[in-house]
Length: 128
Image (cartoon, rainbow, N blue to C red; front, top):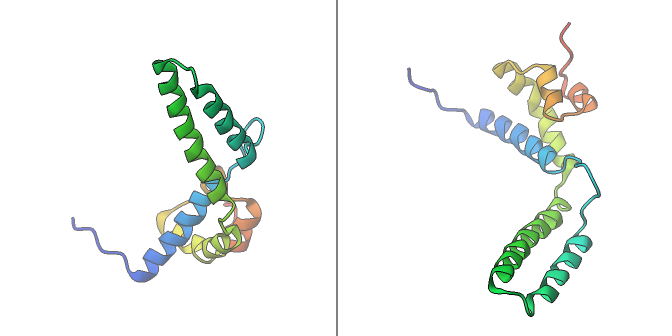
């Protein structure tokens, strides 16, 4: 059975839902102390200080740690540039038709982190 191609409207719908859900996932609260760009930069300085006089294997571990922290710092800086309002507007515009066509329940939306208020605005109600 051949799969039908998505229309441009369906592609826009999918993109609106996908982008919002990705942003929710990336900005989800995590346990523990909140990481800030300043705290990561402080750790990077500490690693640079440890490099002098470190053995070859210790230096290898420090290099990997530095690379991981630089990646985390980029992600933290990028997280501040995400326009959640615009993404939520796109989600609200498309979520009801997307979910209806794919049989996605209110509970499934809630489980992936969509707030009840956002679902209400999108016109998605709890099933009775």
